[in-house]
Each structure stands twice: as C-alpha cells, then as structure tokens.
Amino acid sequence: MRRREADSFLYRVGRWWLTSRFECYSGPVAVDPFSSLQRFVFMSGRGFSYFAETPGLPLSLKCMFNGRALYKFGRAEVAVDDSGYLILNDRQPYSIEIASPTQVETFVLWFPRGWAEEVLRSMDNATATLLANAPNDKGMSALFFERYTLHDRVVSPKVHALRAAFKSQAMIDDGWLEEKLRGLLASMLASQRSLKREVGNLPASRASTREELWRRVNRARDYLHAHLGRRISLNDVATEACLSPFHLLRVFQAAFRQTPHHYLNNCRLERAKFLLEKTRIPVTAICLECGFSSLGSFSTLFHQRCGMSPRAWRNCHGAVAEENSNIREVYLMGVA
Image 1: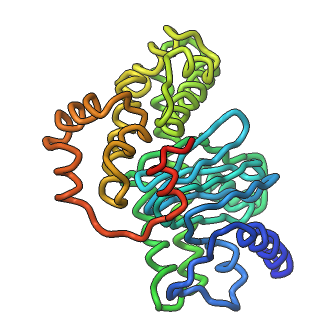
Image 2: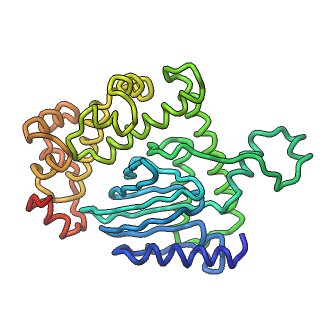
C-alpha cells in the first residue's frame, strides 16, 4: 500500500475514532511511528461509551476485552465480547456502539486490500499453477461469514499474539508483521472452510439453500446474543431470521446442537457472571439486565449451572474495577 493511501486512511479512521468519548490506547505500544503498514493494521482504544458508523472500510477482525460492543450491518446485529470475535468483509458498511458499566478495550486488525485474495489463491492452486500465473492475477474473492465467532484454537492464538506484540515495549518489525498477518489470514480462511463443511449438515438438498439457511440461523443466534436483556419469543427470533418458528427451531438445533432458548440462557448466565465479577451493580439489577423475569428464577438457574448462588460467585470471583458511574447509576435507579 502506498504511504499516501495508508496515511489518508489513518486520518479518516483516526478522526472517526476520536470524536467519541473513547481514548486510543495510551499504554506502552510497540508500533513503529514511521511504518505506514503498522499504523494501518493496528487500532485499539478504551472507554465506557462510543458510537461511530462508516460506509465501509477494509477487511477487519474485531475483538473486545472487559466488555462488549454492538455492531450493526445490513439486517444483522452482533455483540462482540471477551469470548469471541467478528470478521467484517472489505467495504462492509457498519456501525459500532458501546455503552458499558466497565471500561471496554477494543482491538482491531485491518488487512490491506488484496492480501486475503492472494493468500486464498496460494491455498487453492497447485504450485505449478502458481508459478505459471502472474502474482497479481485476480479471479478469487475472499468473503467471510460475518457472524460472532467464539474464540478457537485456529484463529484466536494468532490474534492474541499480535495483540501481545502491539502492547509490548519491543519494536515490531514490518517483515515479522507481514508474516503474522498472512498466517492469520490463512487461519481465517481455513476456519471458513470448516464452517462450510458444517453448512452441509443443514436440512436442505441444494448447497445454495443450505448456505442461505446458515446465514439466517446465524443471524438469529447473533440476535439472541445481542439482545439477551430483552424478553424474546421464538416468533421474534424467527422473524429476524425470516423463517417460520418451527423451521427456525429445526435448523437452529441442527446447526448448534441446542435450542434457541437454551442458547439464550447460556448467554444470559455468561453476561451475569461477567457483571458479578467486574462491577458492583446489585444482584437484582444484574438479574433484570440479563433478561431474567425474577430474582428467584435467576438464582435457581445460576445455582444449577454454576454450583453456587450469584452472591457467592461474586464473593469468590469478584474484583474491584473502574466503573462508568453514569451507566452504573442507570442500573441502580432502574432508568430505561
């Protein structure tokens, strides 16, 4: 990428990033200030609240630590938290919103245009074919399923290694970074292929129908994860996925080996554990925030799944953390 192009991109994103109540990461970082590649690739910030939208930027992988962020693109709504990541394709318009009782750290990796396609060609073509073709031959498009993905043993270790390098005090070398980014892209593409094998298990005869079902059922799953504080019916989720309730139930079970209700309860419990550990928000407020109808039903389910009460969990795992006083006041006062 030419230096002028990279600098122009950084100016646009930097202004977009800093107009919110959010701070770019201010700790010791190892980015070479004279490297346009490094200033293009890494983006990180911390804050309690943030909103921005963009008409579309390069292919990116987005992670959150110590909280969650809500991404919206097309019909999809995806909440990204400590347990997973989101890949957004090149030129995908989206918005991001953070309103958190904890200080959220974002970590985003941007990939220069054309790199994913180059890696894909190298993975798909035989060596003789690669030698016969020009390095810049086009024809393949690297498109990813845009969905919330739990951290795994294929992609996530490479992301965590890049984050550790970014936050260290040792200067990053451009050659090392290029190798790591291309290795990460190869892992992302390999993970994409394994997902396509899972698509083949869905109840439909045509491959195109199975892929469309996969997109819709993931939209339903992401909707549940993004709106776990709401009272959500099966009909609500089916409407989001543009499927009938029974069809959604059948496809959801085939795709994820559990029902939407079971998945939603798991998300609610994980969110409750996070708030118990990271904030001083009262247990009753956490119960309601996570979508449970009563403190009794919340405590019973929590004890069944976790082996102790919510208050006992806080006593065992809780830690004093910096909180967003405004958001905490909303929780305490019960303001909608």
